[in-house]
Image (cartoon, rainbow, N blue to C red; front, side):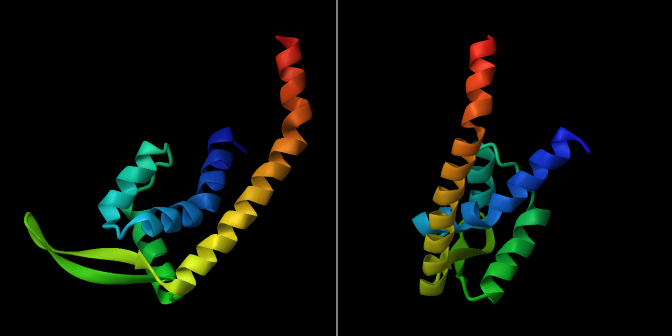
Length: 117
């Protein structure tokens, strides 16, 4: 067991939430999504993102639309469906509860670390 494996699993666990959140702000092209995830330090490659987008589309959480590009072939832009927005709202509520619970559960250990410095 390595810290890197655990960190990767934690990132994968919240990837769906982050992708839906990005798309909820404005329709998005996959490379735009990847760039936003990289900027947030959630490094993702196309081989991870495309299957996730396909799964979310098949679950009726996303729609897509082909748009002409000035720099090549048409591009597929994703947007949330109403069902996708409801799903995201539920994920966000769960994330807030989980974040609060983790902060409370780890408060003692981070307090002890600070007092040891």
